[in-house]
Picture 1 (cartoon, one colour):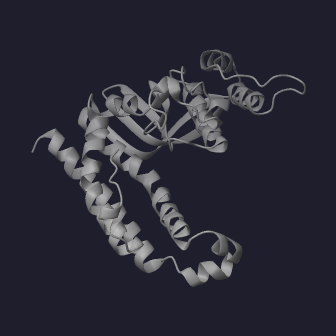
Picture 2: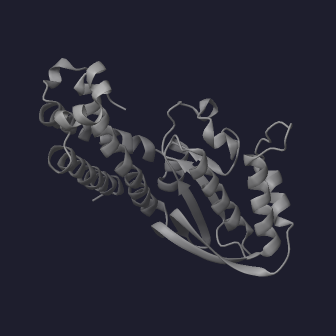
Picture 3: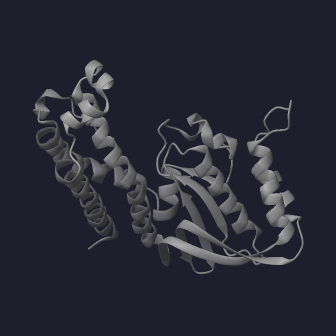
Length: 274
């Protein structure tokens, strides 16, 4: 079996496992019950068709588990080019006390500008330079990264988040990445804030406001979005391979969702592919 075939099989296993759980949840474990919806939200029910809320009921039970699916797919992609590819990996090290203080100082300035002053824009290189000048007593530190890759002496860590992350999640990710770079005898060659795809198309068009408080999403070298992330961990063409395989699986599950969950004929709706 070729590497491409192995990846395709892994994608099918991961996506089908997740979708089967979602279908079980919305059809049996936690179905949309119109009477319950009418009782809990009588004003909404009076103004908006049940089908709209039935769709949002499905969406909430689909979006949350998909976050973990991206990490599983990343592990599979990383196995192609790296010796180790691990989901949820702890990295231990020691950080000078004043570097830890400077990390908090940098984050605080980005979050809360001085009264009357304009908000400070993130500047990765200047921030890191300032932090690494910190000295002091060595303190133990542990960082849990979403994805860890290793090939020979080269080690990489990733914070892999949804394409539209909120501010708090992005702040935590930046703090983790800064800690990794601040550790004595730096345990990774590089650490990245990565998004699995770009809803805005090209990197230069990414425009979700919340992460911009913490990173320059268009320029920072520690940010990866979409195909640049997948092609880095799995080789050129990996992102398109994922999209192609997921589209193949999509027809089957769309048919099931139309028929079993929405109770409508799929032929009445336009098909859509990634």
